[in-house]
Length: 250
Image 1: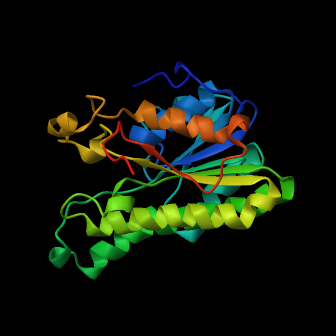
Image 2 (image 1 turned 180 degrees about the vertical axis):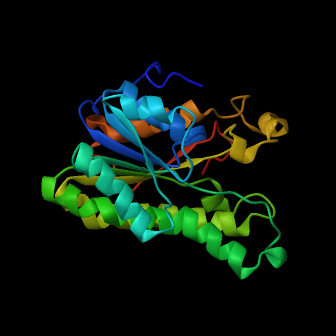
């Protein structure tokens, strides 16, 4: 297990902030949490499953775990209430929780479709809706949502539900940016592709399709999040940043 306090950081501007990262038990979410923590933020890791080091997270002064099912409004409210009771309102929200499935369109039933939308898109909506009012009151906030290159292209073959959900995530990020820019809140999305995580296991054979010559790492996404979360990105909002090693250049 990676030491959550040891990540190297390339950007600043998050010290003293309160951050919440959904889907943070592993993969990209965990890397994002580590980067924000190393930058000086207090970080709440939200997930439906607790990480193996939950006890250590809860015993530290600057980390905590909160169980959160992003598809449930009551669960989202309860998780953020725990964070607020301990530290105060969230300054930085990273909407990372997501699921992925390869499934032909004709074999995708309504239940499959609804579940993909519930986790990937509705989860972003519920978490953003929960934190935005208090960000507005304080006149500062960062909402960063993890989309996908599939949201731009429709995805590789047999990923219609996933691609549609991620397109929605990125459109929602833009809508939040337009509505909340006057209140000191920025909203941006990332569009990663071919990041080497458990969720997309078995993609190593695609590395030769990436111009930079390797698969993406969770830390590549985390560093982009850290940049957008900091003061140096205060003039950037409503953007979708590609993190893909040149896999998709548009």
